[in-house]
Length: 308
Figure 1 (cartoon, rainbow, N blue to C red):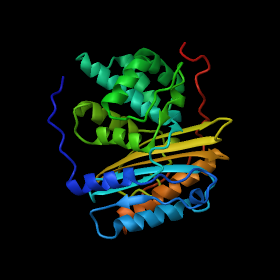
Figure 2: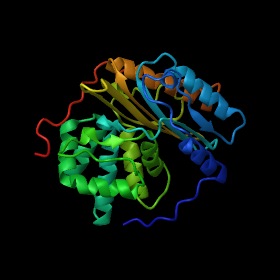
Figure 3: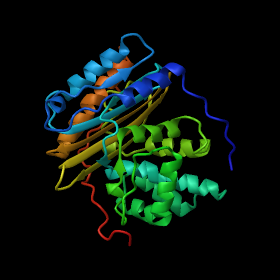
């Protein structure tokens, strides 16, 4: 099993900024005046960047009818942003990154590599968002092992779905950022090989599912993404996107969670409006990378026979 060095502490300014963003008073819920004009709370080591991000994220959400949560961490500029970042959402398929991380951590604890079967299922789960593959791995792990990983990761607001309903795992934007932090930076929870494997699969998501947080990302940056989309009777469409942007002097992660959307396209539009604002502010003058649209992404559904 790979040995790890103690992870480096973030710079003091980043730690203080993150605390300020996370501890800021929550924005009022949907339907209130505050919800009509949500205010992102940002802090940064770079002069003027926090105010610009806060203004631009707020502007990107102006007039949007859904409920949106945002969490951003940029270690390059010492920047954090938070908006409704501790509000819980049904996970839909963004939980699949957590499932893969839990699988890899469990394998590491038993000093073994993934089997060919597990590797095939993991690849389908992340790159194609295959639900059947996810259900098989979820059953193999059991809710207990997924919960054990969540605790080890410090994702204290995340609650794994019950009775086989992995898509109803309760997540928050801040907890998803904690997960992305583990995936992109050295730590004691995931080995370097595990982190590289997760990023590799997130970097190979099929073109029709590379929408969301990659929108507006600069050319030359490595894009790693996982999206989720699910419609239910309550809160309409959930449309989520988590992304890591690394290489070429970049090192930042972004989570955008939405619900109360009237259609999937509405949620995608909201996520991408926020993402474009973030990428533009973090990378002034950069040209956008090619963006694919979700033209043939099927609707996600929950397991038909939970737990079987």
